[in-house]
Length: 319
Image 1 (spheres, rainbow, N blue to C red):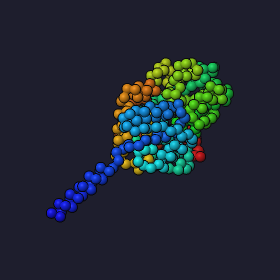
Image 2 (tube, rainbow, N blue to C red):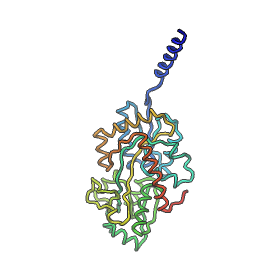
Image 3 (cartoon, rainbow, N blue to C red):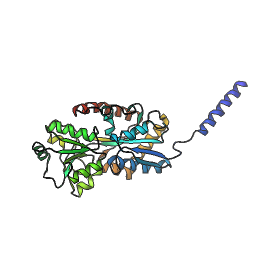
């Protein structure tokens, strides 16, 4: 009899405990983006956040927190309460940061965990101002051997910086890097004549290309970019250049409960099947990426390891 009472009492406690456990999410969720408003990561984060708001009945809102190649936003999330209510959305630029900064203030692989991917972007566009005399990659290489050419990126060590340096190395040219705070500032510099060249992920610049304000010389992917099929591949124009692209991942603090991580992963993956969302991702050149939390973290760890060699090749010394 006593054993039965103990069992019943324990069962009641468990049931009450479950009843008192709040369902996630039960209040607004903040998504930090370390890049400027209107940039590719910002567009993707807003697109998914709007659909998550509808799907999970709580506001998901995006906050842009710029600086240090996205690491300020990343540090804020790494140090946040691990409850799923503070998330990070980042491009692949985050994967090189352990080799760029001597003291990040957090461990990229333990203090942050990848939640889900919005897709893989096959490549970047190589742009010049439409008023430039440079009409092709061959023109660009010839001109760079005659005069100093400057290019911009959203900061030292980001994937755009590394991709440009990899091109310069394979092309046998010297290009001067001008770091900016965000891709929009880089574009302003290009249109204003402060720089002559930029590599950029397509989402935020397609309208400028289509309007004829900038000229796309090449695409760094493995196959032509769907929205601009006539733009040649850089790998076909520069011997030894390996295709390089980007991706978009959601992250949570490292100790976020597994159940919360999996719920977010499922919700984000479901969001990407909504036509209004998937059409935007596909328009911007992203291939679907349907991995679970374990698979996406294995992928991310591999990307971080790969960037070690890229940073070394670009001869970047940790700051």
